[in-house]
Length: 379
Image (tube, rainbow, N blue to C red; front, top):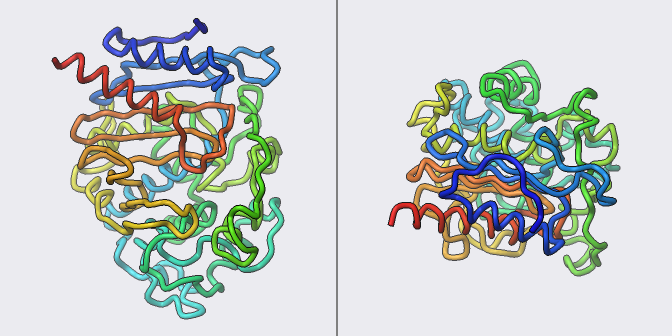
């Protein structure tokens, strides 16, 4: 069986065995798993390799690009500002960002940005990948763009644009970038090794993502369809994350770098109703907007049913989570789940990418092993 290092409460040995099995089967090259209960780590493990050649072991401090798992950090920034009374999710975006009201967007609310219902899932103007490092260009184009559907009328996954949209609202309120706010107000107090805009000193610890096999983009639909326009302008692949410009930029929906421990350290604050390990970032009431349903139906971009709250995905017939649980995942397979009733946080981060846009079955297997372990411990 593959070597899995770190610490694991024996109640959760099934989680350790699941990671080892994934590594043995070649489904994972390198990965880390963290489970926090009542804000404390009960599983903090890692194994495999940080490179496809198998020459660099995945270490305790190895980090990688977690793609859309980054969004959950952006959500927390917004939740904190809302809890402080500086942001109203039900207010027009233009209250904070006046230029946004162009092209009939006067009534678009902040909650529409959070719930992928704003009709701005992609850019109408052609962008190169490197343009994503130009914050002013990306946000100005969105401010001046007409929605692709009636805002509030169902979701369409704002795969990359969501970070710029919410991030610009944060910047207008705070006068600083979302990455700066996140580092000072969240990652710093929690001692979490997670970065939105990754500094050079972290580079040597990064496990480069291993891309999945190429896909036929024509399967997404016609060239002018919403899925194609969203996911191919610009097209982002695992190789995109290899570039220095990508690491240094702040792309708050997609380019966060961390590992399962750092993601879980942060998100366990939500599972703990605003507090973890003696650090309180939110009031208990400040966590409740997460469960305000914003969309429930077939997503225009993902072509799959999704129930979405204030940022986070919520439980549904398709995603069987508890009534006060929420989740999100990243392109390639990373996954984060919070259950406020169980005071439980489960995170899986890897370097070998699968095709899935919002987590995959490897993370699901870790979650199922965690749930089974809890059930066994309480029986």
